[in-house]
Length: 483
Image 1 (cartoon, rainbow, N blue to C red):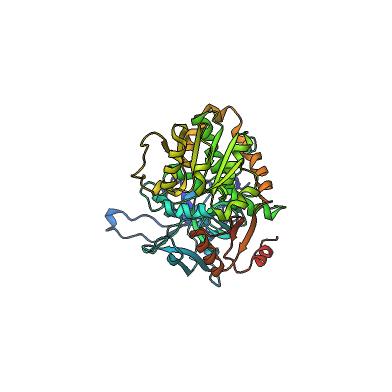
Image 2 (tube, rainbow, N blue to C red):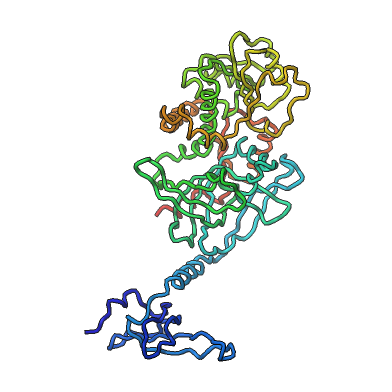
């Protein structure tokens, strides 16, 4: 009987390595290809290329055809893997070519709408271990502006490196959104996989995959796809991890709320944790820019743990909106600092990042002001040189990445179920915000540019949330992926 058990997986063209020959031992270790077989006697025809030796003058020998038993060769797994990946790359070459449209910023022009530019280029073919992402939609808010601003600093320069541009005079950051894998040459990332994470404001993105993390059903943790991003430090690694989504989503509107508010609420939730840990059971907090989405989320978290006084400060134009949310116990304009009560210990959450306003609040509250916690763009401002009570009110800068590391070791977080509370409280926050905020969808370059200009000049209506897409036709995308 012919022995064929060791020939399983052998096919014509398979790369193999010769082994175990006794009569022609010089061919052991040579690499070759299966060119024919198996014959009636169970042997395969293997064409090998002997290695050139020094005594042959460095010239390669002629290919040799051997008739080998299955026991005398084995699959060359490294060559086979390279062969499969190469075939995947060839299969991923598309016709006609895809055109990408990307929003970028021009260096040297600041962050105003004058710095915006649109780049339309052909999407490159995939290399090994890469995916082509179709960016279905992304949310744009002051958080995205904050990412752009952070990229100008030495400490946070990596915020411009998430999806670097090849041009020296252009840069960009990223926005929270959804994307779908259109093409893949990575063995563990399937075509059609939907992802939630940080994506560039563009139509497509080709990105290398660094690795995958399977879902942990016991802990309720979803599967992750880690994208490879150069020059991104370890403390920002979470921005590389894309959450794998279930495709059967019943509420597409909830998806929009997720990409627009989930990160904002998480950051506000962490601010509340830092307040709880650093200030104990303090019962009064002042929040500037009270109409901003992050301030609303922080006020919600504070009221959720029964904070006695949550005082909002806003402009005259937004005061009616802020009061309508019923999240603040009191609401003042920036001109009414002298009208605020100063008979109890208080913490000031500085979202406005206005040194003059901080000084006025410090003077008004005096020694009852425990902290000035600076959030957002204030990390780029110099301290007010004319501050009267220097060192009296401690200034603390809230850094989300640092707090994420610190909270793992804080008893007030690890032993009180804060992680579980984050999940279900976010759902309650979205339900409440649906009463006061409305999602505005933008699908044109002109509309995105106009929206950006309003956000930059801080004249956007406080009750609007922006979800954008650069796809040519969203309905056609739904049809493509219906199956």
